[in-house]
Every structure is written in structure tokens, then in C-alpha cells.
Amino acid sequence: MRIGNSSADDFEINVVPLIDVLFTLLMFFVLTTTFVQQGHLKVALPQASDTAAAPAADTLVIVIDKQGHFFVANNRVLGDDEATLQRAIHAVAGNDTGRQVLLRADAMTPHQAVVTAMDAVGRLGFTHLAIATAPAAGAAAP
Image 1 (tube, rainbow, N blue to C red):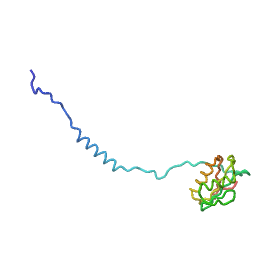
Image 2 (spheres, rainbow, N blue to C red):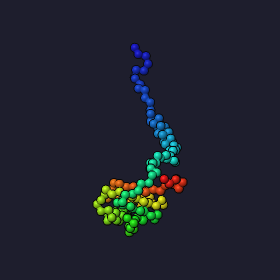
Image 3 (cartoon, rainbow, N blue to C red):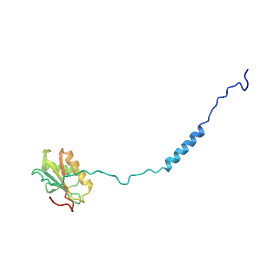
């Protein structure tokens, strides 16, 4: 003989309010969290030798002045776009893409002008590119 209720009651936990509370807490933490943005990035800069190398006689020299104007082999390029620069380089160098290219940019040259010159040289197939620099003001000359 059984004593008690003969119907088996299934024990059930209603989790809908628990899910609502979890989503509310999740939204609270997402909205109040501050993400730390790195203000100072540590970058390891490449090293260059301090000895000056003399450019070869057949080196193609591209000069960029302070205003971003291009000069190829001491001749002003009329136009500051990449296509015009490519035509000027091709007129001087021809198909000799084995030549070394020396890029001499003023310290105050806009960065875009330097990138444009590097793109033009790269798209023409030149693989030997050097960027001219000057020693620091306090550095002793060799």
C-alpha cells in the first residue's frame, strides 16, 4: 500500500527569470566596461649602418622636395601623380629594372609623396631601392 499522493509530481525549475537576470547582468557589464587603448606603442626600429655608401654611377636618383614635387635625374616631373612619375622614370631608365634606385626625400616631405614614389618604382619592376638619409645633427661624421 502506498501512502501519499499516487500521482508523480515532476519537479520543474522555471529558468526564464534566471535567463532574464543573466542577460541583464551581461548587458550591464558590457556597457560599463572600459576597454584600455594602448597610448604608446613600443616599436623596434630597424638599424642602419652609419657608414655612407657612395651610389653607383648608374643609380637612378628620384628627389622629392618639401612640397612633394618629384625630380627624376634632376628633371622636374610635371605632375604629382603616380602615372606621370612612372612615365618619367621609364623615360630615363627604360626597361633596365636591375638598376638601383635612390630615393632622396626632404625631411618635411608629405608621407604620401614618398609612398607614391615607392609604388611607382615597385610597379615598374625595380627591386633595388635605397632611401637616402642624413646623419643626426649631434652625430660625428666618419
